[in-house]
Length: 248
Image (tube, rainbow, N blue to C red):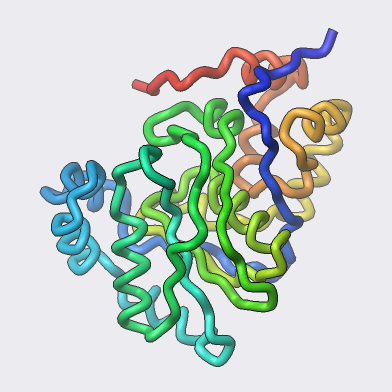
């Protein structure tokens, strides 16, 4: 019997395949530097002034300048932020405001996260299981740059990108204040996808039924996480058992 995940995962997220030339995410500062900063806890808890101080001190100028390549396309910067009651974290919005001001790019506050994914501090299985969903106005034909405070497995960026592209927009770049260096590679590599399908391809139809997208729309980090598992039944079991338990 196939394991079915709880219906609370519905509605399903939207995702899109990754183009081979999608650029790696920019990570402004090392995770240890950010999380040990005196302002981080207050900023993560919603302190706007603390977020401003944190961003102004840690924002990487080279990463900012890399975004200028898109100036001719009049990009829109979109922070990952939830609607009322979902998250008090102000870091993504403040980073987006700072980038918008520095580059004179348009800032969007219309696109919001409509689900509570609760990823911070959770296990990789919970990250895979809990999908960030999005809603709001997207202008077809516009170019978008996504911004968040942290990049882990990249699922939130993948879901936001999928939503925007399903609405006719084009996501060209993402930036995060911090994250795991290996997570900067969002675009799924052809060799990784081939290896995953060779090892666990028998559950891809099940995966589509659960999550609404196939292995081809995973991020590189998500696919590598699944590749570490020896048996497909273990993947189904671990996802079914996953709960918002905090690691360590």
